[in-house]
Amino acid sequence: QKEVEQDPGPLSVPEGAIVSLNCTYSNSAFQYFMWYRQYSRKGPELLMYTYSSGNKEDGRFTAQVDKSSKYISLFIRDSQPSDSATYLCAMSFTNAGKSTFGDGTTLTVKP
Amino acid sequence: EAQVTQNPRYLITVTGKKLTVTCSQNMNHEYMSWYRQDPGLGLRQIYYSMNVEVTDKGDVPEGYKVSRKEKRNFPLILESPSPNQTSLYFCASSSLDSPEKLFFGSGTQLSVL
Image (cartoon, rainbow over all chains, first blue to last red; front, side):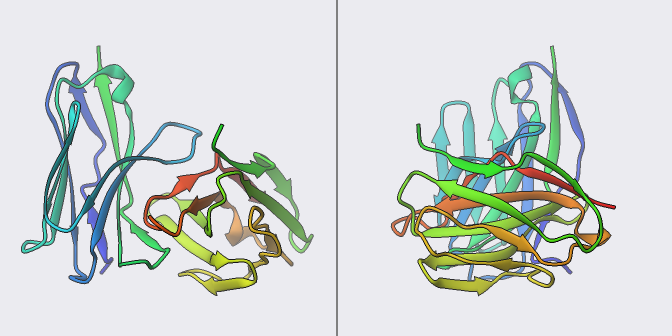
Protein backbone atom coordinates (compact mmCIF):
# COMPACT_ATOMS: atom_id res chain seq x y z
CA GLN A 1 0.00 0.00 0.00
CA LYS A 2 1.29 3.46 -0.88
CA GLU A 3 2.04 5.94 1.89
CA VAL A 4 -0.01 8.60 0.11
CA GLU A 5 -3.19 7.82 -1.82
CA GLN A 6 -4.84 10.43 -3.98
CA ASP A 7 -8.29 10.32 -5.58
CA PRO A 8 -7.36 9.28 -9.12
CA GLY A 9 -9.71 11.31 -11.27
CA PRO A 10 -9.81 12.56 -13.92
CA LEU A 11 -12.25 15.22 -12.85
CA SER A 12 -14.27 17.37 -15.24
CA VAL A 13 -16.40 20.26 -13.95
CA PRO A 14 -18.17 23.29 -15.43
CA GLU A 15 -16.72 26.74 -14.91
CA GLY A 16 -17.77 28.20 -11.56
CA ALA A 17 -18.06 24.85 -9.79
CA ILE A 18 -16.54 24.06 -6.41
CA VAL A 19 -13.85 21.41 -6.72
CA SER A 20 -12.71 19.07 -3.97
CA LEU A 21 -9.43 17.19 -4.30
CA ASN A 22 -8.47 14.65 -1.65
CA CYS A 23 -5.59 12.58 -0.33
CA THR A 24 -5.20 10.09 2.48
CA TYR A 25 -1.97 8.97 4.07
CA SER A 26 -0.77 6.26 6.40
CA ASN A 27 2.28 7.73 8.18
CA SER A 28 1.24 9.79 11.19
CA ALA A 29 4.73 11.34 11.37
CA PHE A 30 4.07 13.61 8.39
CA GLN A 31 4.09 17.23 9.56
CA TYR A 32 4.00 19.31 6.38
CA PHE A 33 1.27 19.07 3.77
CA MET A 34 1.51 20.63 0.34
CA TRP A 35 -0.49 20.91 -2.84
CA TYR A 36 1.28 21.39 -6.14
CA ARG A 37 -0.26 22.33 -9.47
CA GLN A 38 1.27 20.94 -12.65
CA TYR A 39 0.35 22.22 -16.08
CA SER A 40 0.99 20.04 -19.11
CA ARG A 41 4.69 19.83 -20.01
CA LYS A 42 5.68 21.90 -16.98
CA GLY A 43 7.20 21.24 -13.58
CA PRO A 44 4.98 21.22 -10.48
CA GLU A 45 4.59 24.55 -8.70
CA LEU A 46 3.74 24.93 -5.03
CA LEU A 47 0.16 26.07 -4.57
CA MET A 48 -0.62 25.63 -0.89
CA TYR A 49 1.39 24.73 2.17
CA THR A 50 0.14 23.77 5.64
CA TYR A 51 1.93 22.80 8.79
CA SER A 52 0.08 20.27 10.97
CA SER A 53 -3.74 20.29 11.21
CA GLY A 54 -6.11 23.07 10.28
CA ASN A 55 -7.28 25.16 7.36
CA LYS A 56 -5.48 27.63 5.17
CA GLU A 57 -7.09 29.92 2.65
CA ASP A 58 -5.52 31.76 -0.26
CA GLY A 59 -7.94 33.46 -2.61
CA ARG A 60 -10.13 30.82 -4.22
CA PHE A 61 -8.10 27.97 -2.72
CA THR A 62 -8.55 26.36 0.70
CA ALA A 63 -6.37 23.58 2.07
CA GLN A 64 -7.62 21.41 4.93
CA VAL A 65 -5.62 18.97 7.00
CA ASP A 66 -7.21 16.50 9.41
CA LYS A 67 -4.35 14.63 11.08
CA SER A 68 -6.68 12.54 13.23
CA SER A 69 -8.20 11.05 10.07
CA LYS A 70 -4.97 11.25 8.03
CA TYR A 71 -6.89 13.13 5.35
CA ILE A 72 -6.14 16.30 3.43
CA SER A 73 -8.22 18.26 0.94
CA LEU A 74 -7.88 21.11 -1.48
CA PHE A 75 -11.00 23.12 -2.35
CA ILE A 76 -11.19 25.39 -5.34
CA ARG A 77 -14.07 27.87 -5.40
CA ASP A 78 -15.42 29.48 -8.55
CA SER A 79 -13.24 27.23 -10.69
CA GLN A 80 -11.85 28.70 -13.92
CA PRO A 81 -10.61 27.09 -17.15
CA SER A 82 -7.12 28.26 -16.14
CA ASP A 83 -7.37 25.89 -13.15
CA SER A 84 -7.25 22.95 -15.56
CA ALA A 85 -4.11 21.07 -14.52
CA THR A 86 -2.91 18.06 -12.54
CA TYR A 87 -2.95 18.58 -8.78
CA LEU A 88 -0.45 16.70 -6.63
CA CYS A 89 -0.63 16.35 -2.88
CA ALA A 90 2.68 15.96 -1.04
CA MET A 91 3.77 15.40 2.53
CA SER A 92 7.02 15.49 4.43
CA PHE A 93 8.61 15.06 7.81
CA THR A 94 10.32 17.86 9.68
CA ASN A 95 13.46 19.10 7.94
CA ALA A 96 13.73 15.95 5.88
CA GLY A 97 14.36 17.52 2.48
CA LYS A 98 12.17 14.81 1.00
CA SER A 99 8.51 14.85 0.07
CA THR A 100 6.24 11.93 -0.67
CA PHE A 101 3.77 12.62 -3.45
CA GLY A 102 0.36 11.34 -4.44
CA ASP A 103 -0.14 10.23 -8.04
CA GLY A 104 -2.05 13.35 -8.96
CA THR A 105 -5.60 14.22 -10.00
CA THR A 106 -6.16 15.76 -13.42
CA LEU A 107 -8.80 18.49 -13.39
CA THR A 108 -10.52 19.97 -16.43
CA VAL A 109 -12.71 23.04 -16.01
CA LYS A 110 -14.99 23.51 -19.01
CA PRO A 111 -16.09 27.03 -20.06
CA GLU B 1 14.17 35.59 -11.92
CA ALA B 2 14.34 32.77 -9.36
CA GLN B 3 14.44 29.48 -11.19
CA VAL B 4 15.64 25.92 -11.49
CA THR B 5 17.08 25.20 -14.92
CA GLN B 6 17.32 21.71 -16.35
CA ASN B 7 18.92 20.67 -19.60
CA PRO B 8 18.15 19.16 -21.98
CA ARG B 9 14.31 19.28 -22.13
CA TYR B 10 14.14 16.23 -24.37
CA LEU B 11 16.65 13.44 -24.81
CA ILE B 12 16.55 10.26 -26.85
CA THR B 13 19.40 7.83 -26.36
CA VAL B 14 20.25 4.17 -26.70
CA THR B 15 20.82 1.52 -24.06
CA GLY B 16 24.23 1.76 -22.42
CA LYS B 17 25.25 5.20 -23.63
CA LYS B 18 26.22 7.33 -20.64
CA LEU B 19 24.35 10.59 -20.25
CA THR B 20 24.15 13.54 -17.88
CA VAL B 21 21.16 15.76 -17.17
CA THR B 22 22.18 19.10 -15.71
CA CYS B 23 20.37 21.08 -13.05
CA SER B 24 21.18 24.55 -11.78
CA GLN B 25 19.38 26.85 -9.32
CA ASN B 26 19.94 30.56 -8.67
CA MET B 27 18.21 30.83 -5.28
CA ASN B 28 21.17 29.81 -3.11
CA HIS B 29 19.15 26.84 -1.89
CA GLU B 30 20.82 24.22 0.28
CA TYR B 31 18.56 21.30 -0.68
CA MET B 32 18.45 19.86 -4.18
CA SER B 33 16.83 16.66 -5.37
CA TRP B 34 15.91 14.60 -8.40
CA TYR B 35 12.53 13.00 -9.04
CA ARG B 36 11.15 10.85 -11.78
CA GLN B 37 7.51 10.93 -12.79
CA ASP B 38 5.80 7.91 -14.29
CA PRO B 39 2.09 7.30 -15.02
CA GLY B 40 0.42 5.52 -12.12
CA LEU B 41 3.53 5.84 -9.93
CA GLY B 42 3.59 9.57 -9.35
CA LEU B 43 6.72 11.49 -8.44
CA ARG B 44 9.42 9.39 -6.81
CA GLN B 45 12.63 10.74 -5.37
CA ILE B 46 15.87 9.41 -6.85
CA TYR B 47 18.55 11.26 -4.87
CA TYR B 48 18.74 14.34 -2.75
CA SER B 49 21.47 16.61 -1.42
CA MET B 50 21.43 18.71 1.72
CA ASN B 51 24.50 20.72 0.77
CA VAL B 52 27.79 20.59 -1.13
CA GLU B 53 29.35 17.13 -1.01
CA VAL B 54 26.36 15.75 0.98
CA THR B 55 24.07 13.43 -0.95
CA ASP B 56 21.74 10.59 -0.02
CA LYS B 57 19.58 8.01 -1.74
CA GLY B 58 15.90 8.55 -2.26
CA ASP B 59 13.32 5.88 -3.03
CA VAL B 60 14.58 4.74 -6.46
CA PRO B 61 18.36 5.35 -6.69
CA GLU B 62 19.36 2.22 -8.65
CA GLY B 63 21.04 3.04 -11.95
CA TYR B 64 21.64 6.70 -11.13
CA LYS B 65 24.52 8.76 -9.78
CA VAL B 66 24.68 12.34 -8.57
CA SER B 67 27.32 14.77 -7.39
CA ARG B 68 27.16 18.14 -5.63
CA LYS B 69 30.48 19.90 -6.11
CA GLU B 70 28.94 23.37 -6.20
CA LYS B 71 25.93 24.65 -4.31
CA ARG B 72 24.03 25.71 -7.41
CA ASN B 73 24.53 22.56 -9.54
CA PHE B 74 23.24 19.02 -9.08
CA PRO B 75 23.72 16.86 -12.19
CA LEU B 76 22.05 13.48 -12.63
CA ILE B 77 24.21 10.82 -14.28
CA LEU B 78 23.01 7.63 -15.95
CA GLU B 79 26.15 5.54 -16.45
CA SER B 80 24.46 2.81 -18.48
CA PRO B 81 20.86 3.79 -19.27
CA SER B 82 18.24 1.09 -19.76
CA PRO B 83 14.73 1.27 -21.26
CA ASN B 84 13.13 1.16 -17.78
CA GLN B 85 14.72 4.55 -17.11
CA THR B 86 12.55 6.12 -19.79
CA SER B 87 10.69 8.72 -17.77
CA LEU B 88 10.07 12.40 -17.08
CA TYR B 89 12.73 13.74 -14.73
CA PHE B 90 12.49 16.78 -12.47
CA CYS B 91 15.11 18.58 -10.49
CA ALA B 92 13.95 20.50 -7.42
CA SER B 93 15.51 22.79 -4.86
CA SER B 94 14.46 24.19 -1.48
CA SER B 95 15.91 26.31 1.26
CA LEU B 96 17.19 25.29 4.67
CA ASP B 97 14.42 27.36 6.27
CA SER B 98 11.65 25.58 4.35
CA PRO B 99 13.00 22.32 2.93
CA GLU B 100 9.48 21.07 2.19
CA LYS B 101 8.69 23.95 -0.22
CA LEU B 102 10.09 22.59 -3.45
CA PHE B 103 10.87 24.65 -6.55
CA PHE B 104 10.89 22.46 -9.64
CA GLY B 105 12.58 22.73 -12.99
CA SER B 106 10.64 22.31 -16.24
CA GLY B 107 11.54 18.67 -16.62
CA THR B 108 13.58 16.42 -18.92
CA GLN B 109 11.75 13.83 -20.99
CA LEU B 110 14.15 10.92 -21.45
CA SER B 111 13.62 8.05 -23.84
CA VAL B 112 16.05 5.11 -23.76
CA LEU B 113 15.73 2.85 -26.81
